[in-house]
Image (cartoon, rainbow, N blue to C red):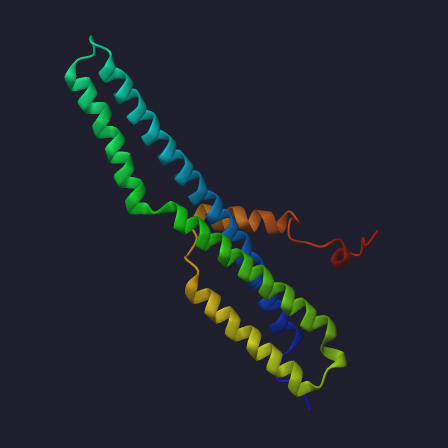
Length: 166
């Protein structure tokens, strides 16, 4: 029985999953930085406002501004929910890496399997790709470009794939 997919289609799946994984990881790093930064700033402003209140010579309007900045940062953090976005980006990146690994295994082992089994496995990989694509958030442009840079720099290349299996 003839295979219903080509090596190029499998290579496209691997390439797409690899680029998507790196973009999602870069997106996760961005959200983690936002989470830590906004949280730290909110805590710092709240702490300064609390300490300043204990001092007798700090004018009330200064205390009010510090407290308002701290509460505004808390509102921004609660609205953006960066901790959840970080986790979703990390999970999507891992799902894409798993997809790319499974596709590589299929590419390397398909010759030893029946054609219908290879086709069924490939269709399963496509279904998994669609599922991850639907669930993953779109990365910001800078995250996409950093992810692309990572792939082009070889951060997602295995030595065995470039012939240097030493």
